[in-house]
Image 1 (cartoon, helix red, strand yellow):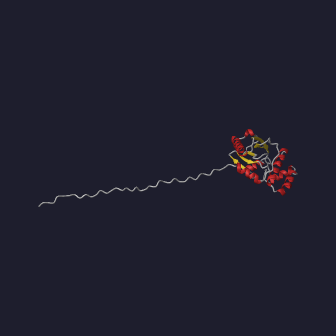
Image 2 (cartoon, one colour; image 1 turned 45 degrees about the vertical axis):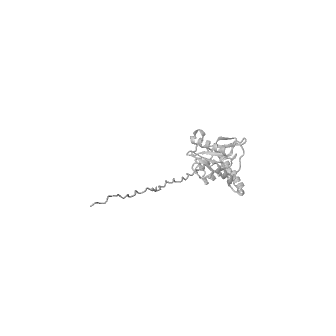
Image 3 (cartoon, helix red, strand yellow; image 1 turned 30 degrees about the vertical axis):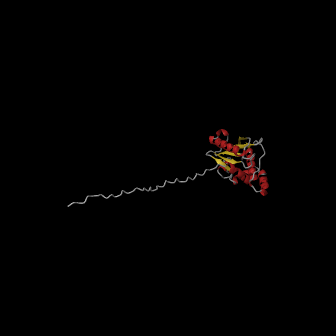
Amino acid sequence: MLPEEQIKAIKEKLIHHISSTFPEDKKAIAISQIENMNHKQLEEFLIQNKMISQETPKQKCIFCSIIKREIPSYEIDENKEAVAILEINPISKGHALIIPKKHVESEDKFPQQVFALAKKISRKIKTKFKPKEVKMLFSNVLGHEIINILPVYEDESLSSPRISMKKEELEKLRKKLEKKIRKPSKLKPKKKPSKKRIQTHEKKPEKKEIWLPKRIP
């Protein structure tokens, strides 16, 4: 059975996901069902939705499922060691998550490329949205350590209230922050200089008549 702390974290994530993706007329019922699930019911729900393995419940987590594209997300960038996605229930505008591709349980085991992606996204958020500062804050869900890239406009922190964002709003943010793929510029082929025939107007030498004296018999 999953530990109490993990059950609480999973419920919070599922409720956040429902709030931002479900139709308005179905949100309340779905959230109520998640809140009223006991440990066994929640575990069965996660197994049915392939979010954890039946044999080893701790084997998979929400973030591992995102990495494997089993759960949809608003991805904005990626490198060999990590993926950057938008938080679907952000604390502030531009709140993003850096998820290591390996199930790493503490930040001291992060490959350098995880930090490199975090710094890259921080700079981009700072440029695009002009917050006072951008904080890199660690958090752990289901034993999977992640980095929160949190833009601070006033005095936001990880304990601040979260915003319920619509799909359209998240999509607009994603387009502003996603990695731009540069298309190769189409170079116009250089025109080869045309070889023009140079017409020469050379005068032909005139044939001169040679005068010879008449033969005298």
